[in-house]
Length: 125
Image 1 (spheres, rainbow, N blue to C red):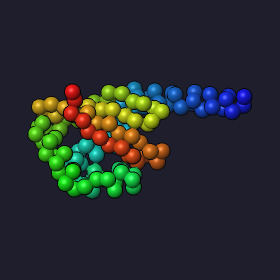
Image 2: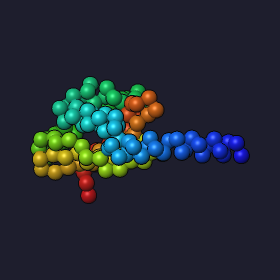
Image 3: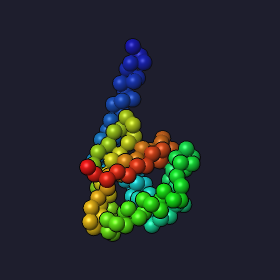
Image 4: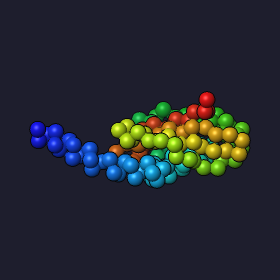
């Protein structure tokens, strides 16, 4: 019973923080996602991986960053991110990356240490 109360108290304590982060577009999560997206657009692999955790860094190649940069440039100038949604249980944030001629969806997952454990870009359907 005590464990249940402690679990409920922890959940109540986390909800306001998660809600305020969602209202602000994820706060530091959005700044991190924007920085990585700008680095991808600039074809800067060091800038891309500087916010990644070790597991994610090992999955990225220079060729992949270059190919994604080319796809972004085909959509024109990068305009920034727009917050779409969050899943606080997964520490996952969804954004729309806006360009002159279109958009892509960006999904990130944050580790407890503030590093990205996932960064994915999808063309909207």
